[in-house]
Image (cartoon, rainbow, N blue to C red):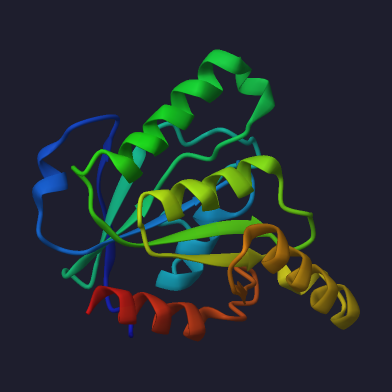
Length: 191
């Protein structure tokens, strides 16, 4: 898959006409500050299509980006941000669950992004379990792999696979390592 164009369309916090658009949706989900925005930017070869922040919890809505005019990349808010407070974190969690399980959105693929340098958190396991329960196709993407040496990579990738019960695609948004592999997975899911 070659990315020729990418542009922001809209942000939603509930039912919206864009959900009825027949173009396939590929959603990106993960904990706050795991690099969701950076992963999408690296896929489309743009530095700031998706706004990222050093402050976790910035994304509070579901953002749609049209890619090549024929599919959407959907940036979901990050889950598990403690400083947001229990009420705010629960609101984000419900928004994500609504997107995945309401039936209004029909993602062809969800890219569950985890930090390659950190053991998966209970929220990551919960998200993988929810995706399985909803019969939602997903891939686990271990971002920030460039920060690890070879031994750490092997060890951490095995630990992530064991914890989340699925194969993992190693990735670096910074160096774009794994970009072609992820684009292949996305292309396969969108056919």
